[in-house]
Length: 307
Image 1: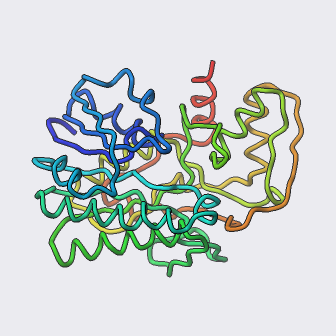
Image 2: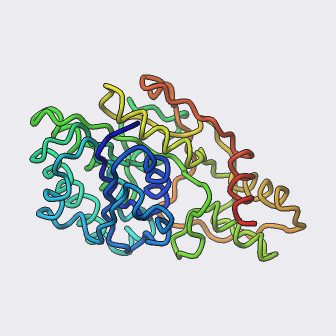
């Protein structure tokens, strides 16, 4: 992508900052983030290089309308993205993820944005005995977070049908990579495991460890966003690696890569966690998405960035 005007909501977060890093050399970028989860230091080396940072909220419709003027693409990454946090505070999650997404779509419609690329989630599938999960399956959300992401998809579809605003919803599976925050109470499993192993402390697994996940490296997710924006594709697409691993196998792989002699600690399963997840990524070939990293490659790059 070159010579485009781009807005990234939630651009100081893990995925948004990686997307900005990929685009900044050849495009003009505005990032809006309220820093509730993102960190401005994720962008420290990018500021001033075709990139403007605005501290603000997607709850501010007038701000979005001002920032979206003359914008080609909006990459909507901003969200409360934690299942446990959504269970603790469903109202705040709804305000950010549903009302915030509606604001983004309204501002995009009124500003003549060419396309909105929306970050959805595998959580919309819930628990299902059918694997891999394909976009044609009936959603079965099992947490407030999952419900809000599905509503966001529906809003995208309606704005495309009613207002002719092109949209793509990317259902991210389990994204990981360098600079993912391991310190939050709601941190994703890979940065938590890496942090504990680096401290010579056994990883903690909630449940029996036989639950499976499809982990996708952040560089593949960034590329999927850009490909989806530049293509004529619209609709809902899975973005994963297309392979799954048990959480116990994941823990052992991280321990092996980091050359540690550690066991694993098991604790009671958490409410809202699904048992199995695996992406059917064949539909995303419509815009030439194909993951470039397998799990071990991605983990080695992630761990190598800690050194």
